[in-house]
Image 1 (spheres, rainbow, N blue to C red):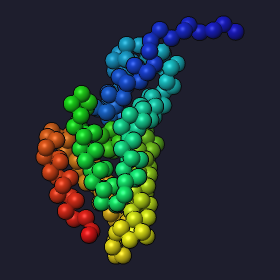
Image 2: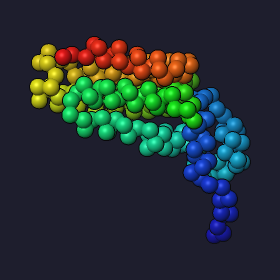
Image 3: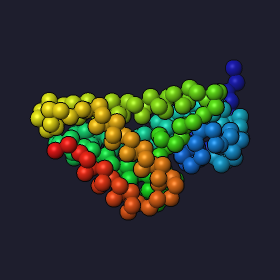
Length: 195
């Protein structure tokens, strides 16, 4: 059986272009034709290298997580639950207002609302957000067990609170709210932290 022609494009660079488009416009906001044109390849090459649009989006989300999601894991190693929450909020503000990146957060806005045909993508993104919230709740439960949080603290509600503020920060960044204001919002959110 004859081999196909070798790829004459940089797969990683093409994936970075796709990531940026998905981050800017969301899953349904960009067509396969637009993706291929921006990546500098034709549609058959896109399919050969990445599979379909859904598979390309999943690869882009994985790349986004590798490039930008590490701050959650670093946060969970901090000494107190308060430090964890502050670190996550501070780094969310940095992430969603990076100067050379699209405003907002791919994990929040990439597929928040989709057509019925893209329900699997919407559900996948919701599951990923809930996984981060579950990890946070587990970390806060550990803090409560260690006496770092009051006995009446609700680790799941605290995790939901931080993720809700995070999501709001991402939406506000996409709306053009500047970093300095989002930092103030994060600081205000921490005023509600149980002592």
